[in-house]
Amino acid sequence: MTSFDAIIIGTGQAGPSLAARLAQAGMRVAIIERGKFGGTCVNNGCTPTKTLVASAHTARVVQRAAEYGVRTDGGTSVDMPAVKARKDAVVSRSSGSLEAWLRSLKNVSVYQAHARFLDGHTVDVGAGSLSAERIFIDVGGRPRLPELRGLSTVSCLTNETMMDVDFRPEHLAVIGGSYVGLEFGQMYRRFGSRVTIVEMGKKLIGREDADVSDAVRDILAAEGIDIRLDAECVSFARLPNGIRVGLDCAEGAPTVDVTHVLLAVGRVPNTEELGLEKAGIELDARGYIRVDDSLRTSAPNVYALGDCNGRGAFTHTAYNDYEIVADNLLNGAQRRVTDRITIYGLFIDPPLGRVGMTALEAQHAGHKVLVGQMPMSEVARAREKGETQGFMKVLVDANDSTILGAAILGVGGDEAVHSLADAMYARLPYSAVQHGVRIHPTVSELIPTILGDLKPLA
Image (tube, rainbow, N blue to C red):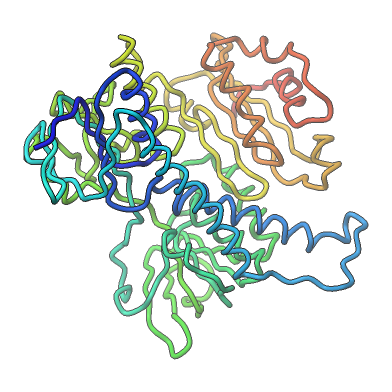
C-alpha cells in the first residue's frame, strides 16, 4: 500500500486543478484516471462540440454570403473528414497537454487505472492499493440510454460516439430537444443533413420560459429543421437502409424514416463500480453522490465534485466545485455550493446566455417581478451583423430592485449575460447597471435601456 495526503479519482474539470493546488500546498497527491484525460468537457463535450459548432457556423456564413455582398460562384462544400480532423486535433492538444502537465507536477503521482474503494481511506488500483487522509471523487457522467421500444434492435449514436462521425448523415433524427440535442441538430443541418428533432415534452428546453423555448424553435425551424413535440411514445424499427422512428405526437405523421439516430436524453453519473458502499458513501435515487453544501459526502473525509454530485452538471460548476473545496480546506473559507448563482449557455447559433431565475421560477419563489425586454432586431450590433434573431429579457425584484435573472438569446448573448451575473453576485440594485456607460456598438449597451423600461410581469 502506498500512502498519500490526498487521492483524486478522475481528471475532469475539478480534479487536475485540485491536484495542482494541493500539491503546491505541500501535500503528496495521487490522481487516478481510467480513460482519457480531461473528462467529458475535453473529450466529448465542450471542446469538441464547440469546435464542430465553429465549423458549422462557417458553413452557414458561406451559405449566406450573398446576403453580405460576397460571391461564392466557385461553389462550396463541407469536407466532413476535414471537419472531424480539425476537431480531433483540438481535442488531442487539450487532452495531451493536460496529461503532460499532470505528470510534470511536483508531489503528484498519476495512475492510469480503475479505482475502487476498499474502505473510507483506501482505494484499489489493480496493481495495488492507495490510502490517503482525504479522497476526492471527480468521475463525471455519461449519456443516458433510455428504455424505448425497439432501441436494442437498431444502432444509435450518443454525444460520445458522434465524435467518431466523419460523414454527413443523410437524415438525422435527434431524440431529445435540450442543450446537447439542439446543438448537434443545428450543426448537422448546417453541414447539409436533413434533421428531425424529437422532444417528448410540450416545448424545447423544458426548463426555460415559454418565450425562450418558442424563439429557439423559430430559429431552428427557419433553417429547415423539422421539430416534433409531445412525442410521448418513441419507438424504433430497423429498415433495410435506415431506421423508422415511431412517434405519438399531437401533430404530424406517426413515423419518420431516417438514416441515423442521435440519443440526447440526458446523462447519468459514473458512480457504479467504484465500491462506494464500502466507504459508506450514499447515493440519491438517481445515482448521484449525496453531498452537503461544502461538497462533503456521507463519508466525512471524502468529497464529490463535478457531474457525479448532481449539483451543477456544467464544466464551470465543476471547476467552481474545485474552487470551493480548495478554498475551504487550504484557506479556512466558508464557501458553499448554494452561494453560486445559476448560469449557463445554450450554444446554438445565435447562443442563449442564461443567469439566475426564469420568470416562472421567480413567480413561484414569491417575488414581485418586473421585466424588461427587447428584440435583437432593435440592437444595432445585431442589425449590422445581419443576425437579428432572438431577444433580451431581464427580471428584477420590484421590492428590493435586485436583478433576479436574465435570458439573452442572440448574437453575443453568451458573453453579454456575464455583466448581469456580476451585478447579481454583488447584489447591486438594477440602477447601478442602468446608469453605467457601455461601448457602442455592442449587445451589452442595450441592457441599461432595457432596465429603463421595466414593467410588471403579466
